[in-house]
Length: 548
Image 1 (cartoon, one colour):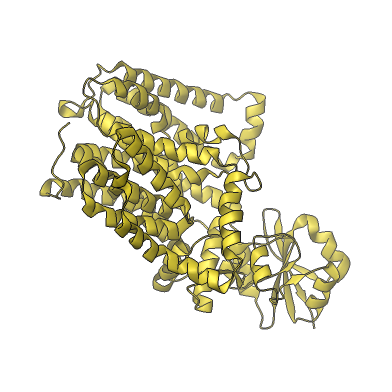
Image 2 (cartoon, rainbow, N blue to C red):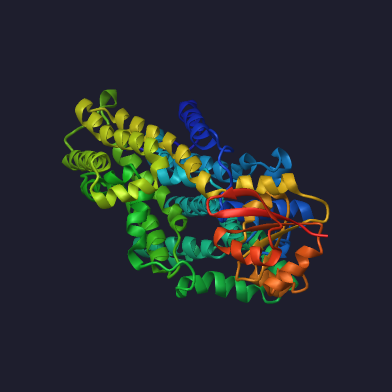
């Protein structure tokens, strides 16, 4: 497939406008409707709120204690969003949603540079309709912004290497610096690893990676914040680099999972397109006119997956950067099979087999749902609130490949994927009903009296702090605030014993207790019927005690 010129032309605007409209709907519709969920959304929103409260943009705080597990870029973006739009769910999620939208344009740009605007557009549509990408683009985490800047850096570096375009390296290192400010030096490790492996594979001179000017740009963007925090808190580098980078990679202390953990995860994140991955990875690789960019895209995705698979600590969003190169492979593969009228050229047996497997899997899942065996029925009963969503999703999932096979039209695949992507926001809203303590936080705000206090009894919720605008006093138990406590031990918001907590409550005009129902007897023994129930969410309750 002949590559188009790199400059944007009139022919690009329909594609760009189409991506903008699709992305705004997928990532923007009802973005602010679900409540912020603990722990991640509540944590990052509360850190951004405290930036504005303290007017401290250099040292992130959580519960008014230094919180230095991650660099501050997403906190800064979220705080700016709050400043412009107010402290709302929409403002909190806007940086992730805009990062996801920008990722579509990045995919289009890379696909266009490799094969032309048609393949670039299809690649971006594939990425936009991966259910994992949609879901992570609609919740507040660091991962979508990190994936955007890391993939921008990797893609620009590859274009610089493959086209001998040194002018792209400063932009690649600028993007890499932003990725470092999002999640830390893992960005440099991943980008450097991918570029090095490519240079070795192509037998290019290693000096092609020596870019002192780029290193200066990277250092200028990322090092000042780390140097400032290290100067303020000398123990920062040990905590940040060892405990939360090398420690997570080398030891199973945090989120331990087996080596193969990401094999099913990547398939889940890529749904529904994951059923075409075997075809695009195996069958398309045997085409008479090989794709010259295919080896790099495979290396890019594999490096991300293998690197995080080797890590002892694992979380689902870590491998988000692998979705973009896989979407590019899928988009190019589908574009290569389209003939006049956008019909499939069904000479490709591998594609037909993949679609049949997809259809059989969809029909099988639908059959299990509607006629479940006893163990499955028990599990389905636990998620009864998802039933309408599951029924619609299963029907669309099963009918999409059948329609494409029957009508020999590529449009049915993309239409089905778009319909499934519209169900992802509904799924996020349904999950938030269980995981967001929004009503608890709103009850705290409504009942708050001057001189009052919010106490967590073996329970801490960042989202409750965000919604109420109040920090927690905590009955002493291990939380993510431990390092901040060590840095500033004088901040006395922790109780060593229930007796100390009770004495504090008696001295206040009002104390609001947030706890799980199982700890209610502990308070009832101390306050002897003087507690009033204010709100309840799942197994968590909010109680009021009127003191002096």
